[in-house]
Length: 163
Image (cartoon, rainbow, N blue to C red; front, side, top):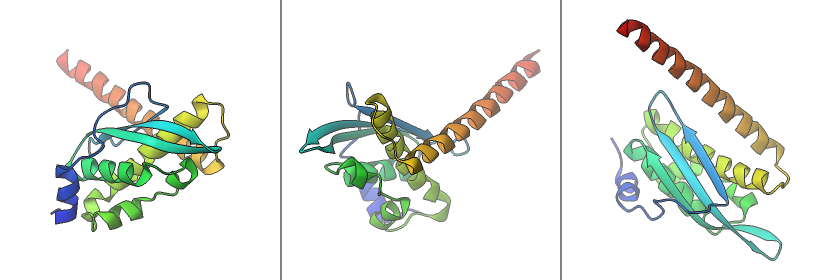
């Protein structure tokens, strides 16, 4: 199902973990597949540029979710924030040599987690947030609301069945 490149990224995680006192934290998940990612950023300011000095991830999910998290960290580390926002799921898939179609959403989650971490950093520091990043954040919030409503309904139904 997975090619050698994807398996290699899964087995050789370079950015797994968390960052204490992270400058930005981003979360993304999918209730259908159960994948959940958290990305942590440490930002360094150099010559009026904000550079991703360090980036780590924690992912609960399948091999593809973990591999795409690793790739997005590799692509973003050392980049200026504006350049990191240009990272696409297509680029991640290209680096991995292609994911099975049913696993393509994992690369979307990785990009969403990165964008959420950058959004979190910008928001915490009262910096201007690009319009497309704001729209992406609103989309993710709507998805999280839907997920929370569905989980609440499931929990209520489970309670009713117990009675």
